[in-house]
Structures are given as structure tokens and as C-alpha cells.
Image (cartoon, rainbow over all chains, first blue to last red; front, side, top):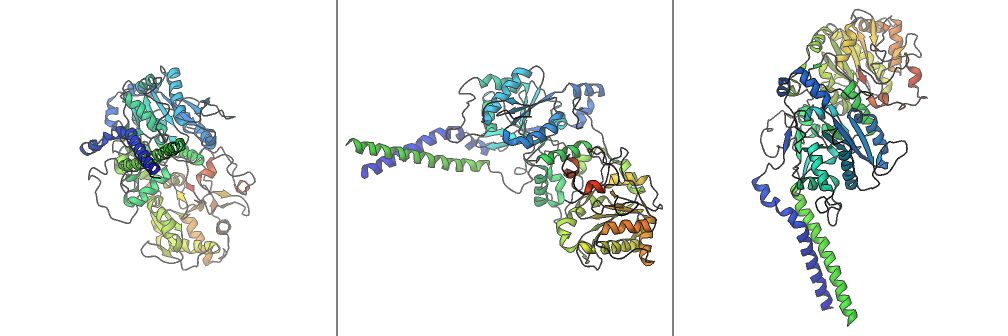
Length: 318
Length: 308
């Protein structure tokens, strides 16, 4: 009895030590770091209207036309109703949008990933997109079908940013020592980041296919870890007032929270005028958003946009 | 002897597994806490926990959806401002004591601010909101009676303060700028009223109560007068139909509120119902009531939505 209980205790101790050894190294850095560098999150700002107006009108038109965004949407058969809504609505404003599905679904066009794991799907999709489109697109936007995106606002945000720099932006979250872009708000990668990511995907140990020892690490965190190895860091995208432009919440929820926490400044506290994404909308809400964002107008209000991004020919919902 | 060491080994393994799991849970909790964001900060402001910029003190209570001036600094509203002065609309919102906080409050914080004048009509007076007391009871069967009394009140107190008089429910959303665009081409001295035109029961049609309707000054005068002379009946359980019948009796024209492409601008249901093809089944009563033939759904200029 005594020898058994002692071996049990020895086992417990060994297990704890083993666990600590595995998880601690990744977390030790943040301890002192957090105290001396409270502003560890990185911000990225939208262009200022004044900066844009300095560019000649012709050049602006040219730049507007040559700006191309490729959209990746990772879907699964259970997302079918959202998939349909996304396909009919905002993805029509991408210069090209492709759906990457875990398995083939009748009636829906998609590239089959033949895996159910979102991280696997993400890797495969990024590799596919890079191999096929590296010369055609400078910016790659990845989303889940629960996200609604306003691509024109995305283009405005990226307007003066150099895609040959390693950009990795969206709505950032910090977990432990890792700052990553939340997939729910949409992930934007420049071509340089895509290049670096793809060079690491083949190296085991750098971009492991299996993240986390016991519990599965979410795919957006996996991506961040991988990109970090390549010297690409997550940045939080904000407008000139400091408000997030990529949102992981729906419009309704954001407004509800604004009404609860600061009812005297609902609009000011809530959302950016140039929001790029919202998440958690129902398929019907996506149709209403298209209507509200692109069709409905208040007569007599003229918004002088410095840049105009027209949707690609044939996108029939604008 | 062998079995004993085997047992020992087994307990050792068990122990290490349990130790591992416990430790991992503990670490998860400890380290997870660092990624906790404080609640009750402006959610979209990453600097809220660092700086004091947002410590401005505002008055508690009044909800304000007013457009943030800084975000709209490049917006040109000259035309809208011009129309605000030229096309004066008085809005009265049909509500009740139990809906003031639930619904009317939101109307007040949002679209009602763009009316030239807004009044909230309830069965009982509420000085704080403020809401006018019509001294009626509440209930669907009282709607017409409330409507009559509300228009009467508006006529008696505010006739000269506006050109057009809009009736809306507390679950309706109105885009006033677009309503002014519609009314700008008409004269308030014309006996006319606008809304979502339905065809049954009344020869010239009548306006859906849910989508809201707006009377010209002349129409209002004739409506109020009709009760003094008993031309129109005082009681009905169907508000919009009774209103439509009365309008026909006093020769107020049922106007065409469609936009330049023939699409409807007043909507009796929420946007989803109107925007999504096939949402309302073909057998739904609505399709047989519309005065005008339906046009492709994607709408340009819209006024009113309802039944939230």
C-alpha cells in the first residue's frame, strides 16, 4: 500500500513537472515584458484624407483600379446557408473570391481541401492561393462565412500600404504572449507575408501541422505562431480616430453594447464609419447589410469620397 | 513480486497523467488571466485601459445617436438642410405607456430627431418623456380612436407649425430626408396623402397603417372637419381602413409614393421581408393588397420600415 501510494505521488510530481516544462517556455517572456511595455499591441492606421488628396486625381483613379484583393473563404458543409449568403453578397466585391471547403457540397462551387481541420484547411488554402495567384494579387483576405466584409473599405485602408512589406492585420487579440489576428474579424496578408508564410509551410517544426500538446490550438493562433517565425507580426487595424475597423462582433451586438455602456454617445463609441468587417451576422442580415451599405441613401447628404473603388464588372449587387 | 512492481508502475502512470492534467489546467487558468480585457470600456478603443482621453463626463440618461461630427466632417448636407427648412414635417408617433421605455425611447433617440417637430401620442400623459395623453384606453381596437384624437390634437395645437403631418408607429423607422424628397414636389395646400397604397375595400385604395402615412395640411384640415360634420364614422376596429374610407369621403387623394423607377418607398415589414426573394410566400395576403404591381426588389430610395 505504501509503495503504491509513493509511486502514485512520484507519478503526480513527474507529470506536473513535465507539463510545466512543456508549457512554460512559451510563456516566460511575457512576465517582465508586460510590465515594462504596456503598449505591446501594434496599431495600424487608415490613411488620412489629407494625404490622399495630395495625390493627383488621375493617379488616384489609376491606383484605385490597379488595387486587387483576393478573397479566401474557408467553409464547411454545415455553413451552407451562410456560404450562400456570403457568395451572393460581399464576395462579389472582391476582385476574385474562392471558397475552400472541407468537402465538396453539391450546387456550391468550391476547392475541396479534403480535411476537416481548419488549420490544415488554412495552410492548404494559403499555399494554393500563393502558388496560383502570387503574380496577380498583392493582398489576400481570409474570412469565415460568418464574417461580412466591405471590400471597398478594405481597399481604402490598404491604399497607401506597401504590399512588399510583411503586413498581417485585422482585429488583434492577445493570448499569453502571442498577439494574433482573430479569424472572425478577417485576416489580411500582404504578398510579402504570403511569401514568407509559404516558405515556412514546408518546414516541419516551424509551422507545425499539429499545434498544442494536449488541446488543439485555434487556427488563427497557429497562423500567428508560424508567421512570427518569419518575422511577420500582427497589427490591429484602426481608423484615424483609433476605432477598430475589423470587428469580431455583429453590428447589432456592437450597438447594443454601446447603448448599455455609454448611451450618451452610442455612435461615437460604437463602430468606425469605415468598418471593414463585422462577424456573427445571419444570412438574412447580410442581405440587409448589402442594401444598407450599397443601396440605401439619405437624399441630400453628399459624401465626398477621396477614392472610389468600383466593384469588378459583373458583380450584380452594387 | 512481478505483479506488485507492475501495480506500482500502473499507479505511477496514473499519478503522472493526473499530475500532468491538473498542472495544465492550473497553468491555463493562470496564464489565461493575462489575456483578460477589463469589461466596461469602450470596446473598440485599445487605449482605453492606458490613457484618460475618454474620461469626458457626459450627462447620464439621454441616449444620443446623433452623428459623430468628426466622422462626418466631409459630408455635405446643404441639400438636406435646405429641404428641412422648405418641407416642414410634424411627426406624431403612436405609442402607449408600456412602450415608452421599450420602443418610443429608441424612436426618440434616432430618426425622430430629424422631424421638424415630433410628438409621442399615448393614452395617458407622461410629462417626463414627454408624451401627450389622448385620454383613451389602450388596445388594437382603440387605434382608430387614438388616431382621430391625435390628429385633432395636432390640428388644434400645431397646424401652422408644419406643412405635412406624418403618423408612424413606435416600431417604424422613417428616413425623413427621403420623405422630404417625395413631398417636395407637392403642395401642402393640395388635399393628398401618401403611404403604402393598398387596393381592397376602398375605391381609390387606402394606406397601410403599419408602413406609416403622411397627410398634407389640407388633408389634415378636412379629416378633422369630417368629425365635426359627422361625415366620417368615429369608430372602427381597423384604423388604416377607416382612415382610407374617410379620406375618400372628404375627397383627399390617395397619392402615389413610388420612386422614379416605380419601386415602393413605404414598407409595412422589416427590411429582410422585402429584400429577400421568396421570404414572403406567394400566398401571403400582402401580394393581393398592393395597389401597384411589384417591381424588382433592390430598392433605391426608401422611407419606412415596420414591424420590428
